[in-house]
Image 1 (cartoon, rainbow, N blue to C red):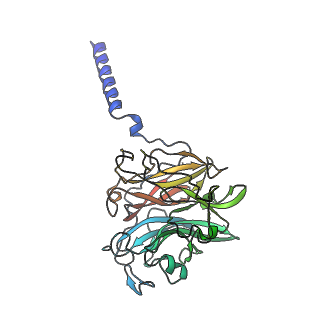
Image 2: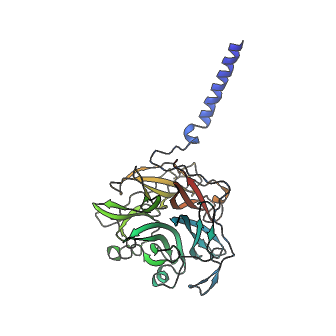
Image 3: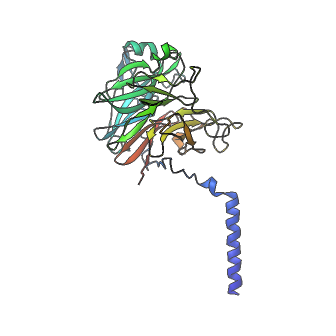
Length: 387
C-alpha cells in the first residue's frame, strides 16, 4: 500500500512539474546574462526615487532675467562621477510644469551621495544652464541643457570633467560638450561636431554621447583606445542608432564616416526586440577584459514590430559588446533588457509607458552604481556588486 501511495504522489508531482514548465518555461522566468555582461543591478530598498522635483529652490536665470523655480516640474536623466571619494550626481531638471513637453527649460542640478544611495547634499542652484556665453545663447536658448553624461579625464597631467549633453534651442537638438575642473562651474563649448569635416555635421540632429572609460585606481576615467592604429578618445553616440566619434582633446570630436564620407552606423534597432524603435547610447562605456561594454536605452516599438513581452514604447536598458582591438566591431548584444521599468513611479509621470533611462555609471568602493531617469520625472539608483 505504501509503495502504491508513494508512486501515486511521485506521479502527481511529476505531472504538476510538467504543467508548470509548460505554463512558465524556465527561459521566461530567468534572464541569465552572458559572462561578458554586467549584472544584476538591484534597486536598494526604501531609497528610490533618489531625487524628486521641488518648488523650494530658485535662482536668478541669466536668460530670463528673473528668479525661476528651476526644478519644480521634473528631475531625471542623471549623470554621475566620483570626486573626492563621493559620488556626484548631475541631473536634468525642468521648470514650469504647466508648459508643454519640449517647451520647458532644462538645467543641470548637483547632488552628492557618500554611499551612493543617500543624498548628503543638494545644491539650491543649477550648475549648468543657458548662460550668457555665446555658445549657450546660440545653441541652448531657450530650451536649455539636457541629458548629461560625465566622465573624469586626465589631460596634460590635470584632471578635468567632461560633460556630453544635448543643447536644445527649440529648433534643433545637438550633442554638445562642456568641461569643468570642479563640477560646479562649467564652460560651454557648443556642439561636439562643430568644427569636424568643415562643419558638415554642425546642424545635424544628434544626441547621447557615451565616452569610453576604463578602470583606474578604483574609478572610471576616460580611456584612449586604438582606432586605425592611432590612440584616440572614443565616443559612441546616437539616439535612433549607434555611431562613433574620435577626439584628441575630448572637446572637438570627429564622427567616424564610411568610404562615402557619410556616417558609419555601428548598430541599428531590431524588429521584434525591446530596442525595435531606438538604440540610444547610455552612460559612459566601459573597457573590460571581454571588450568594450556600451550600455544603452532601447525603446520598444508598437505591438506589430516590438517585443510583445513589454508594453509598446517602453524604455528599457540593454548592453552591447564591442571588440577592444576594433572598437567599431559589434561582437554581441543582449536580446532582453538587463534593467526595465518595474516600480510604480517608473511607469507614470511624463512617460507613463514605462521608462528607466540610464545615463550615470560609476565604480565606487568596488561596486557599480547605475543612475537612471524614472519616466522622465525622478532619479533612481541601482547597484551591482561584482563580488
